[in-house]
Amino acid sequence: MEILKIVITILFVIDCIALSAVVLMQEGKSAGLGTIAGMADTYWGQNRGRSIEGTLVKVTKILAALFLILAAVLNLKVFA
Image (cartoon, rainbow, N blue to C red; front, side):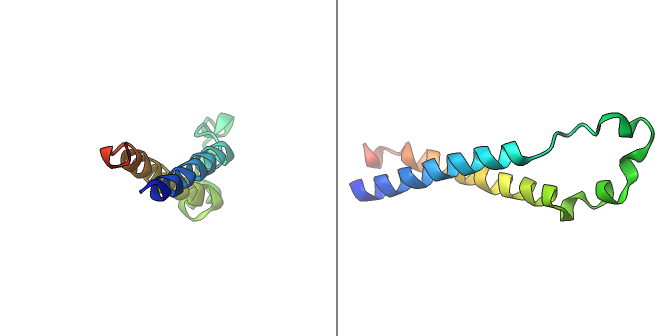
């Protein structure tokens, strides 16, 4: 059981680092002054889900779910 706890802890640390890196790579949600002039309806704005930014959002959701699952598993009384 102790080896399993160590492996899960290592996965948890890797997930924390990856989640931090992915969140920092994302752009802000504000589009700046372009939204005032109506430039938000560009090709980039319409196809955001298929871009790198869309991929980063999906990866963030997956890593956040993994973070919660690993945190819950590590908090079980089985490893105490």
